[in-house]
Structure formats: C-alpha cells, structure tokens
Image 1 (tube, rainbow, N blue to C red):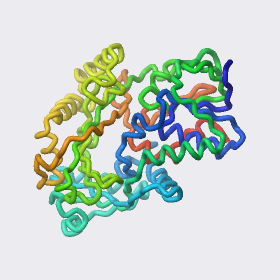
Image 2: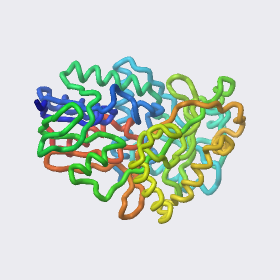
Image 3: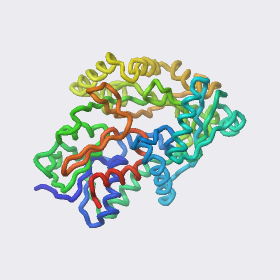
Length: 400
C-alpha cells in the first residue's frame, strides 16, 4: 500500500534536511518525508566535508552561490551555537604567491565588497601574526568570518529536531523513478506526494532525467583525497590557509585546514573518478556507470574546455606524495615529507557538465516540473549555504 505525503524529499544530506526544515517552518501541519538510500546520515558529501563555513569571497555577485553563501554561513554558525555544537570562528588567509595573482586578489576583494563580506588586504607582518609559517608572497587577504564546525553533529541534530516535528525519515529507501504523476517508485514500495524535492546530490541528475529533465547534463565525479599533518607539524597551521584560485583552472587547489577536531588536513585533490561513490581505488566502481563517466571524461579531455587537460595532468600527479607536498609547500614552505601522514579521509565532488558545450557548470542549478523541483550541481559551498539555499529552493517551488 502506498504511503502518501504532502512533500517528499529525496536525499538526507544537508540540502535535503534544510529543505525539510524550511517546509516545516512554512507549513507546520504538512506531511513531510525524507527518503535516503543509505542506512544513516552522512555517508557521502555532507558527512565527508571539512566543516568549513566559507565566507563567500570566491563567488561573483551574479551567481546563486554568492546570494546564499554568506547568509547561509552565518545561519549555520548560529544554529551550531544555539544547539551546543562545536564551532570555531577561526578565520582564513588567502595567499598570492606570485605577482601574476594580484589581479585575482583584486577580483576577490571586489567580490567581498559587492557581496558585503568582511575581508581585508593584510601585509606580511599581519600575515605572520595570523599564520607564522605561511609563505611570504605578493599579497594576502584575511577573511575573519570563515569558521569550522562539526558537520556530522549538524546533520544528526537537524534530523533529531525534524523527527520531533513530525518529519518521517525512510532510510534504506532508494528512489527508482516516477510511476505516474505524483507517485514515486522506491525500494520500500510506492510513495505518493503532492510535491517532490530531488536533493539527491551525486544522483540528482539521474533522478531528474527520470522526470524528463536535465537531458543536456551529465555528472562527472572528482575525487578529493587528503593528507594530514603529523602531531609534530600540527602547529604550523593555526586556522585555514588557502591559495588564490588559478583563473585558468575550475577548482581551488590544495589548501590547509584546521578542522573542528584540531587535526590539520592538506588537500583536497580534484582527480576525475570513475564512480559517484569511488572513494578508494576500486570502491564504488560500477561498470556501466564507469563507462559512461569515462566517455564524458574522454570527451572533455579532447575538447579541452576549461583547461580540462591541464586539470587532469595536475591532479593525477598528486597521487604521488612528492607532487602533493610541492603543492602544499607553496602555502607552507617549511613542510617536510615526513610531516604529511596518510589519512583515509576522501570525498567526491559531483560536478555537473553541460554535454552540449563540454563545460563544467560552476553554479547551482534548479529545474522544475509542475510537481517537482530538482537541485542539480549542489557542490561546495552547499553545506555552508544550506539554510539560505533551502529558502531559495522552497521559494522556487512556490511553497508559502
């Protein structure tokens, strides 16, 4: 017998949870269900991120990311404090290590002004006071509103509050696609809905295609692997040390982050992966999916949009510790090979690609039918943005 709800949300990551919270706030009596294919929270992106609450300085004012990042970050920190969840307003420095990066420094400061983000240019003396082991360079920016939190605790506290408010969670419940209008086929039987929110992260494009949407998109996963600083070297990073983004590359590059536990992680990479859950060498590999992803990667490599070949060569080289260390030394020159120790921490960035242009989509994308909304490309800073992003999502669904 079908279960029926007013709102069904596919995916119990941070976006799905905050959408549920926003729906409950607007319609307290609505029947809301969250479907999750895993047996618990945090198995994928939301549970594997570093817990950094980004300031929003990297995003141009014309992007959806910029519209929700700073506000979302403030609200996430407020939520953490209100719920007694660990949060550290540690701040972040962004380093320009060459003169050619100065125009990008200016662009970042313009983003800060336009998006009303606290940020300041700092001199070498101020940099050394904040991060004594940071590389001297052409310029540096300090972002005081960057913070780190316990991201797993956020997920579980949100779930607890939502359950208390009557939201149903169906774990081990994988969506198979629409049977007919307003009815979803799942591994736990049919689920009826008045409106459906697809917040399935790395599988959002697959579900959207089952609704006749996102035909021009394909997902290419990028694997983020890390090293960790040893106890002897842990003091070399006080908070967060980030590079100036390379304007010729789509991703940020290796940085150093002191997470809420006090550990310092170095990374991540952005290595093309062959599975949406390919966290290890062979883990999460599915032959049909891998062939499709391999086809997309090959096409992007041949077309070379967004300097994709340069990205692949640079990122693949970081499988070798020496190259990873060299990237980290651009920010902290005194790091030694023995001070970077292995860690099992790994994540997947589910990056959407426009198959018509072979270009990476760098902003969030929302697409709809009459009774469904699909959140595509919910990449970083989706965790930071979540509370504010959920408002935008529910507004677009015209839920009042």
